[in-house]
Image (cartoon, rainbow, N blue to C red; front, side):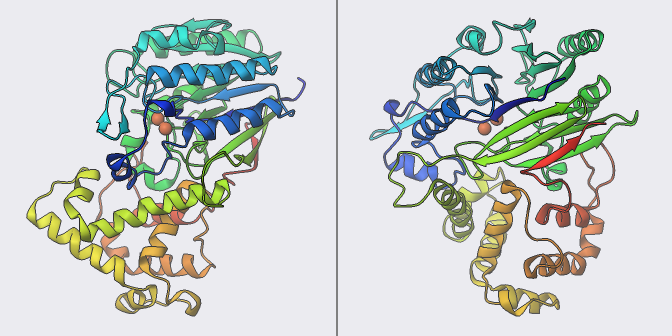
Amino acid sequence: MQPFSFYLITDTHFYKNSLGCYGKEYDEFMRYEQKCFAETESINNSVFEWLEKADEADTVLIAGDLSFNGERASHEGFVKLLEGLKNAGKRVFVVTADHDCSAHPFGFNENGRFEPEGIQRDELFDIYNEYGFGGAIAADREHLSYVAQLCDGVRLLALNNDGSRDGIRNFDEAQIAWIKQQTAKAKEDGQMMIAMNHFPLLPPQPLFNLIGSTMQKQSAKAIQLLADEGVGIVFTGHMHQQSINEYVTEKGNKIYDVCTGSIIADPAIIRHITIRDGDTVEIRSIPTPDFDWDTKGKDCKQYLKDTFDAMIVNLLEDMVNDTPRVLRKLGISTSKGAVFAVKQAGKLLNSVTLGTLARLLFIKCDKSIRKTTVKRFATDLVRGIFEGNQKMVIGTPEGDVFNAALKRLGFVLKKVNAKTFDGKKADIAELLKNTAGNYGIDDYNAVLKLK
Ligand SMILES: [Fe+2]
Ligand SMILES: [Fe+2]
């Protein structure tokens, strides 16, 4: 086959700014937000303008969470951007997801929080008809899924898993049967099949083995299904994270999950993907362009990075200043004991340096980072998990102190009885080591061998 290229973006979370997105309550809401809100229309405009002009591919895939929270006006505004891409000669394929038909969309104005008009899930098929569903070679309206011929030799299995009717984030039996039918048909027709599914099927970073609620339900079953049916790569979003992971099923079938960051949050990325032949896929990552906003002179990357860091710093500081709010945000009970424990932990995190902490744990800490506060270290650690290619690897001052701490706490970590996403016993220290530092596939630019 001829090499085939396309662009992929995800989690556009377009919000029609004229609905209202300001005020005191808005500022409060944004204290714990990783993603932009008021800026999203402007960010989308600049990304779509970039895509219209981009000449290394004429196909664009968008992996869901198209609107901020399902506001009718946001969907209408977003469709206009898709029309612009189409008029510029691009073919566009979208899937819809959990943020595209929320029961309670919201905005903010001078009177506080309000609920703009939303849409019904049933409307999505028609709203986005021209961007996947309409020209599909097979479509499943109930599950908002379809199969499209991307080029001669490559088919796209575009899957929605917001859980048609019952239980969200899952493939029900009918959808599994439909997937099997479509993959069998692709094999019969001699077509390679790639998939796009909003929710990740593999933990984007190892730590997410333990936080399964962020992924698709029964993701082990879903990833095995796709791999054993001959799908070698699935493009996902939802996590607002950059990661590429590999999985081999018991039957020996390999599959990659390529999770891409949201364009409206750090790390904001446009992927460029080339399918070289049936077994080689090249991935390249392009930072999103600057956008029209009062960013106080910062470029796009710095602005989004600072927004991310503010979320972590606010959470850490509010552990001391507004403990119940932090507990509510994390879904933890606000009992007296919990408030006391979190407040004390917050005091330590906010005041102590790495040098002091290392002394308390009897571990070595390189001189160059001894004065770094634990708050700064924690912020870099968490942002690194989202940005991918995490830098805290063994051999760096940060990686060495982190891994020394893991070793020191090893006896406690060994007592934690937890399972990985596919039901195996989790080695917590190993999961944490591989979450702070990336020792595996490059999360940004990679050449993946599917076989
Ligand atoms: Fe999202
Ligand atoms: Fe999502």
